[in-house]
Image (cartoon, rainbow, N blue to C red):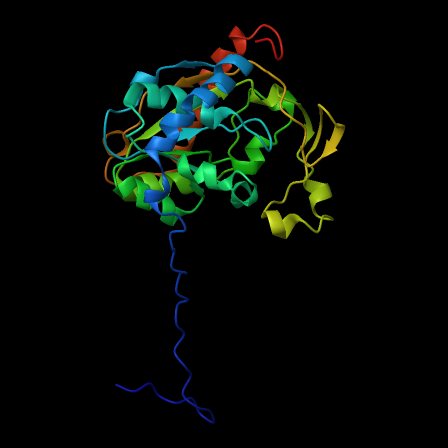
Length: 286
C-alpha cells in the first residue's frame, strides 16, 4: 500500500537508519613473527628484568588455549613498560608459537620501530583487529583506559580508572571469550606525571593528529618539565599480577549487564592494585 500524500504536499520520504561504518582490519596476523620474537626475547628480557626489576605473578592463571582478552591498567606515558613485562613470562611459559597480540595507538607505528613492534604482535587498536585475533584463538592484551589511563597523575598511580570505556566488554561478549584481569604497579613512577592536560589539549593543534584529548605535563629525565610526557622512563620497579579469568557467560547468564561487568572488572583490578600498593615501600625502588 502506498503512503498517502499530505494535503498540499508531496509524499514524505522514508527515513533510513544510517548504516554503521564497516570495520576493516589493518593488521595481518601473519605479520607476527615467532622467529623474530625468539631472537629478540633476550634483549626485551634484559630490559624488563634488569632495568625495571619486573616481578610477574600468576602467569599460570592464563588459560592454556583459546581466544581470551587480557585486560589491564596502563602506566608509563609514551613508553609504557607493562606490555613487554607481561610478554616475556608469557612466551617463556607458553612458547613464542602461541599468539599474544597487543592493541596499540596508531602513533606507535609511526616510530622507526613500528615494523619491529608489528613483528612482536602489536597491532592498531580496533574492534576489527581484536576480532581477527580472537577468532583465530589467540590472546589479546588490551588497555581500556588507553591514553586517559597511561597519563594519569602519579598521585593516582594506585587507582583503576578506564574513563568509563566499555568496548572490551562488547568484544568479549560477542566473541564469547573470557576476560583475564592483569594489574600492574610502578609504571607511573617512571616519571612524575603532574596532569593529563585536558584543558591544555583544547588549544593544541596536535589533538586531531594524535587522536587524543590530552596534553600531559610531566617531570623527568632528561628534559625536566615536559609537555607531552616525552621524558625517558626512570628504572622504577614494576610488579604485575595476572588474576583469575572471568567467564562472562557463566557469571552473568544470557542477559549480561554491561555496567555490572564493568564494575566487576574494575573492582577486581582495584582490590588487587590496593594490595600491591600496600606492599610497595618506596617510589621507584619498590
